[in-house]
Image (cartoon, helix red, strand yellow):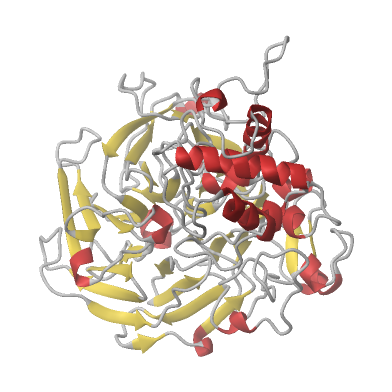
Amino acid sequence: MNPHLTHTARGASRASIALMLALAAVPSRGNSAPPRAAGACPTADTGITLSPGFCATVFADNLGHVRHLTVTADGTVYANSWSGRYYHNDTPPAGGFLLALKDTHGTGHADVVKRFGEPASEGAAGGTGIAVYKNAVYAELNDKIVRYALAPGEIVPSGKSEVILSGLPLTGDHPMHPFVIDAKRNLYVDSGSATNSCQSQNRMPDSVGMRPCTELEMRAGIWRYDADKTGQVFSPAERFATGIRNGEGMAFDAAGDLFVTQHGRDQLSQNWPKLYTVEQGADLPAEEVVKLRQGGDYGWPECYYDQNQKRLVLAPEYGGDGGKTAGVCADKLAPVAAFPGHWAPNDLLIYTGTQFPEPYRGAFIAFHGSWNRAPLPQGGYNVVFQPMAGGKASGPYVVFADGFAGAHEDPGRAAFRPTGLGMGPDGALYIADDVRGRIWRVTYRGDTATARVAPAPALGAAAASTGQPLPPEGIHPDAGRATASLALPPGATREQLALGDRIFHGEASNGTCSGCHGSDAGGTSVGPALNSGSWVDTDGSLDAITRIITNGVAHPRNYTGVMPPLGGAPLSKQDVAAVAAYVWAVGHAAH
């Protein structure tokens, strides 16, 4: 039997078969691991916590910005990594963006780590998607999906790549292209939306939706191609399903049905404050898992899924009234599972092995973590287990793996952010991170006879930067941040600076600044650093900073985050002056 043919894609190779049906197909998935006796986990600190009975090792570390991964029948882990504006245009590791890793000693740690593929010096930027199919590694590379043939015995391909598909869109908010390949050589690829909600002005207050939303011709859906055919060009003709804003995670079940995660839209309260409260904006809409159907329409941009009402409702850009009316959304396809808003589901794995106990034969979702729940605490930064049966959720989800962010659940300061999932031939679960490029290997060492689905304990050091329980006597509002040491801009007062600090961190006036710029003002993938002394859209003067805050940034340079006026918060002139003073002080502290 061809060892790679049974690992046809990330959906099939790492997860491929069965929501709750376990092993109906792919007989060589490595499901021969015997039940493990209960035992203690290794003492090494892995930085995360897991559901009871599970243990982790750090399989590999410091690999670059690792995105998706897949595992072959012989236990080789292949991963793709990315670069560019999402990572502050930092310098990628030397060599190609693709990785081949293997543990040849059975220690839970990769002792073979090799890079391959085109390097940055040849114009490559890497990508997200990766799969193994018919003795070849398929990978997203810039605007292409390419194929590297593997000769017998090779762990790293020696030949050049062939182009399977070219012309993938790289502009706008979602330029990544995850994909899967099924056993019938169908290659399904995601093309995420270019905008948040297809507004005439992206992410701007009261901006109505485009009619028609022409970006749907090439974006916000799943396309299908032939995995065996070279030289294909991306076009509207091959669109398989539409209305999926950003479908980063994909996996097949035993019946061959394809399930896809969807990132819900952003900024309901920031763009439509008359219709949504700050709390609603942080909570809505749901993140989703959908069951893909050919020709299916999942609602974006006209609709979003309200997990509290358990239905699709009309978006405000298209005449919605704050979630009361369904309108055309009554005819769209609803998700089979829903999760809290803005957690960012970056990958999906349907567990088919036997190493994990029976209650965990369902779906795992990697949540990258939010940036736009501000001024409320951010969320996600975890891996969730969702029980499934009959192609839909069969019970409440639990947080299976937690603590990735460390002390700061914040997109700019999180220690790790889950991005990829894979399953080994022995049933081990692999989790990838795109901050440092760490990969964990997770196994079960508990008692299989008494195993029950239960959440991971909270990591003792982990705490969100805002919104945590306070001591009974309370704390001074400026505690923990040294605004007293910051220089004052001309004409500002120390009290004004302290107010600006609180607004920046969402502790006053529903400020949203830290969501895009980080709680330390060090920047995120969405917004630039403000504490470096380098200014992106202004000269750094107090007047210029005030104008930026007041007017917003409709067309940012080098960053993905459009800034609405006032950051979408109800700031008064006094609030704006205070935030401007704080941003000036933080930026000039670098000198």
